[in-house]
Image (cartoon, rainbow, N blue to C red):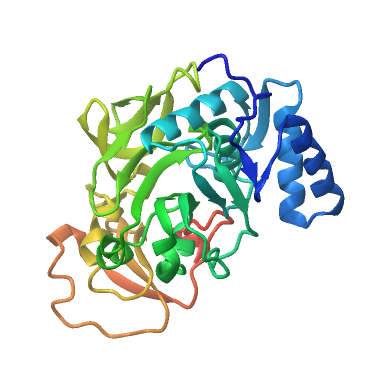
Length: 347
């Protein structure tokens, strides 16, 4: 299928119930830009970019692998990513999909590209924290961020396959609610540089499996290195600590920039948080702050009003994992992707 180009539109493709070819899509794009709301204007601009004569689109990264920067994503690489997703999740032409993510980010762009290339019947709704509030239609494939999932539990019965990305899923949501649903829920791993996800795992499991044509390795820091020849000639080096289980599977341990070095002991904050998840019923994270004696001391930051905890509260943690202080913050800050800003200086 390598003969596909960005000028191709699958015969089965529909947008909001209408079959549209490339020329008709361009006309819709102009209408969106001229008369649409802010979300539709972004969709229109992307569609015009997609069908122009350039071989790439430009967009800003989210800063997962470093500082945000402007990158050129090859359209052919985006097509290959769409095909890999279709293969991995067994999507068929005519499957019904929902776009409820902002198209200014890569995840929203790729839902459009997948639909055009794979022949999905795509409905578009205004991005919101309650994307299924007015919906009773059954969809084969939907992508959401965790907050949207949290707010849509009752309506998830209308989705057959759901992929969740953009931020880490809340473990209590993962453990208590999602296994009871018939919906197949996958957490995805990826970033702008990899053109959305390059791996996925079913909720409740801890091992990610990579998509077709993706190769993985670790660097000398223990961080994930991704090689996807269809996307990038150079390997993509991440700051994510992983354990490579098999040649196509890995376990995400945490981000190296979140590691706290306290008195010479390296603490992976995400692993400590996983142990505390059943004990705290609001959002929280652990992080390090400068300390004269230890270099960094570990603190627990909890969203909400101050509360008292029993003396055995930290018994689930190893000796060095126990926070030296608990800080309460009325409301956590997030970036526009919904990712928690975990740096103490931003509290």
